[in-house]
Amino acid sequence: MRKAFCQLLIYFRSCYQLDVRALAFMRMGVAALVITDLCIRCCDLEAHYTDWGVISVHLLKIRGWQNGFWSFHTLSGGLTWQVILFALHFVLAIALLIGFRTRYITPLLWVFTLSLHNRNTFIAQSGDDLLRLVIFWGIFLPWGNSYSISKNATHQRQHHFSLAGLGYLILIASVYFFTVNLKTSPEWRSEGTAIYYALSLDQIRWLLGDWLYQYPSLMKALTHIVYYTEVIIPFLILLPVRKQWPRIVAFILLTGLHIGIGLTLYIGLFYLINIVTAIGFLPPAVFNRFKIPYQLAWRQHNRIPKRWLQQIRLVMVASVISLNLISNLSYCGWFSFTLRKEIWKGIYMLRLDQYWGMFSPSVLKDDGWLVYRGFDKNGKTFDLYKQTDTVDFKKPFSVVDMYSSDRWRKFAENYQSGFRGYLHQPYCRWYLNHWNKQHPERQMQRLEIYFIDEVSLANYQTQALRQRLCATCNNE
Image (cartoon, rainbow, N blue to C red):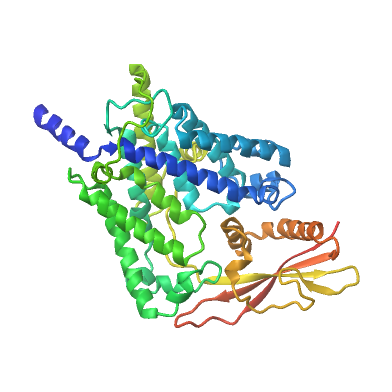
């Protein structure tokens, strides 16, 4: 009996091994994404991360803070402090990219990423959660053992198996398993109208989305294809077989799915994050096919940690896997077990919380755009966005072009929601001050921000437009 059990463990070990080359390519891809994300965020450093921006530290801790959150980005609301932290973050990301002391750099980068994400939760999206969680699992994975300048790199083992590696695989599979389980509306499961409603959102439709939106039959077919692709992917990733084709097929399906999303919806780095963080599960056959070598790092044996440290690490990894699964299951209606508040505090402290309900349970129907009506010292009106004397409440030619980055688009999405009215005045004051700084020749004394609400209906119809005054502010 014991022999059979050991053979079973050996078999499962062989099924869930990871190739160190795949982990190395994922490490470099993740580092490149962090650098790209920091560059995008730097364009709005003052607006998004200082007290002179749209979200002060005080407002964040009152409205955008969970019990257990922390961030050293909130230690000061000044611009200088944020510049220093961003510069250190850049250095850590570059170090991870080249594989410099990844054993120490990875946890530091994770801490900085966690702190940054907590500084402004109103511009965060699901891709940020996935990126942060994969960096966390990178702490326990040997993703610096190939394509690295680290002196700690070793090539004795070309394939890696650990409980942390299994945790990483479960994370990637969870993204698709739980997003499917949370998509309970007829739009996904029977009507096939989910993509139609998603592309009806002018705030995110772009590129090929404009073309695809003209073909309802094609959108219906693609809705079912997307849904069942998300059903299949997690099973292919976790299928307990030694054959390598299931993961190759899973990666092809996953890549095709997210390239399609990226070409039709304006969602920032979300689609790239999903593709890059999946590279780690690619099997050896992919790299052998292109004759990609293992040994591109300095060779020196890693120190073997003490047994008691290994045991603590094992318990920690097992606990994280369990908490991740339970926290994900808690969003499913058929799962009744709930974690205690003290445990949730620990989850939030490490930012292991995750919710993969993209376009779930149904697709958002509320769409619209903002109108910025300014008044100069003589009381004359001016459209601050279109920069015309006549304030136009009509839909812009391209709503998505109103946002310089997906971070602003995400903020606008939160700004427009009725239950986040506390964002209205701070954003109004920031926009007015920002306008006056950028346009000294045309100073505004007062600003009114309107939201024009457009609700999507079936067959390319919409409800009557509703005009809502969100905020009024004066130049101080």
